[in-house]
Image (cartoon, rainbow, N blue to C red; front, side, top):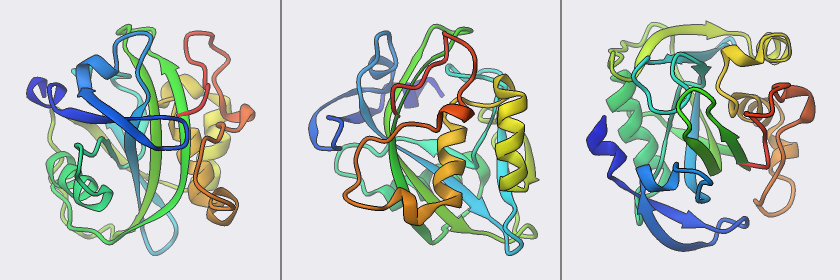
Length: 206
């Protein structure tokens, strides 16, 4: 895990235009540096989504429920290549055919670790069979479960602190891809009703 913290990420502006690079560690130190990221949501034939509970040793939002897989493409690496690399590393899954369903800019401070997420996040959907083999890395994943995404939206309102703060935006774009992709990809706010009532976790866009 520590070696990945020294990997390079691509710094971008709020339109997604790259302008440099830095390490994962540096980009997540306060006040944060906006960089490219991706969030994968695996979906079964019945529309259920695979969630992972982040491992306790994660440096950002440990033990929170999140989408199937997250990560950062290294400079020059395609989103699909990077996402399938992380699906393999985190879940022992893949390769999976992935479709981008939206982009949004998100900001959140982790009150437990003091790290910052400030990311231009590409939301990727992949079809996946529940019977397909998975071998989650315990250093990455504490638990897995399948969930109905509409019910998950309601649960995010009731108990936001059990979930990673970017998950609401990911689910919103998964359920409403045509709305999320109207016009050119650019900054978009997480729906206010999905945000935690917590000043230490606020969206200013990922």
